[in-house]
Image (tube, rainbow, N blue to C red; front, side):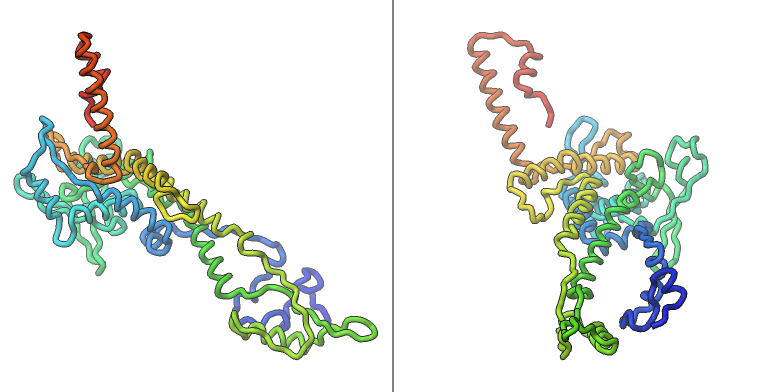
Length: 404
């Protein structure tokens, strides 16, 4: 067969014998054949909600964090440290809106924070400064209108003018800054509109999505990869297939389903050229990328399902560590910000995120109680021996005055 210019110069074959796949994209692979250029493919992080829905690892990490935060019991204290039993804030927490419980509200806030680092809750101010409604809003449907004062802002009204909420039917509603609770996770640069952590996770999220596509292609589209070679021989040696035989077998191959077997009268031999999937390290890549997500949200690998086999001790200690280092501080920071924006902090009120009822944390409390009992008994024995101790020495010895 006579070669044309492209075949002679670039070694590229452009004819109907090459492929029998009904895919126009295969007709435009000349650039890859000539230059061998490969470029990375990164996901679009502008739609964080879509990534949350599509990537199971991202959703699992975000919802684990949200469920742990929502397990708290909010407790209100006054400026004297006494627990408050009756207050309009407690009434709002008991019934925040028509659909959600307070646990649901905290869960929603945590998800919105994880996706956008900006959280908006509609809570209109009533007469007398009280509020009886608290509705988390989708952060991707809220627009912030700044005053433009930039460095001169001292109060919220000097920084934010108002908000605009966009409904599903594209209608808009303006919300005064006093009627919106605006919570942010700082990025270290922006006071308002901080950059979402999802932007930082673009690369591991891209790799997770790519490896799912790769595994699907291997399962659905790529069967055995190799060479079918002719086995016919005569006195002169091997007899190659005729163009007609090769074309017939090749066309039959592409017309079949992935699990169908080729049946041919030609005497052929199969030489596998496939690459073992275990050597592609797809699952190792998934694990590494999932670890990046877990670290970004301050969680621990051991509190998620794993084929490595976590021990009971590892899981328990990891859960405690996550509560201590991430969940409790972040939930408390959220409550502190809400109290500040409601103006209740200036009245001496404090809203505490209490997690002490959780069994995994009660073990620590029981251990501390036993330790305190031993210290108290030790102190009693020392005093019984006639040793005089100052109040400071007693405090150091027993740590009885330390507040948990």
